[in-house]
Length: 113
Image (tube, rainbow, N blue to C red; front, side, top):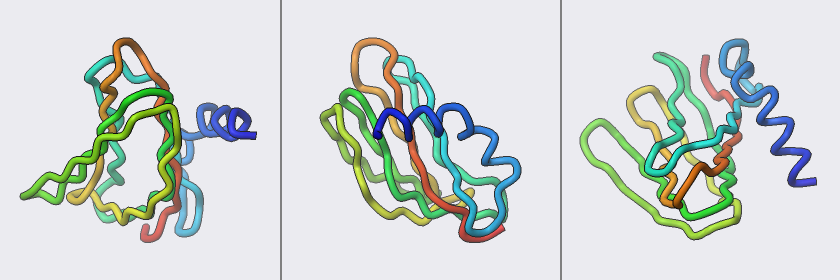
């Protein structure tokens, strides 16, 4: 079931960002190179509520609010359920801390359009 969900997010995740309305799913799933990041950042005037992050190796989740940065390191593989309210200026990144490309995914909903 987990692989099916990841496959759906991988196939349709990027498309959801362009056409999503309030209440619609927003998701992305990418192969991220070592030390590179997957950014969870809605466009200007749009807000998201992110519910889950999936990863298959060690990662660091960073939260930016325009002034300060908070970081949380997680050891994988796993998924991390949480709730994060994101805007264009208060967003998150997920950095791949492993050696080599790793798949990192997230999902949530659009809360303001």
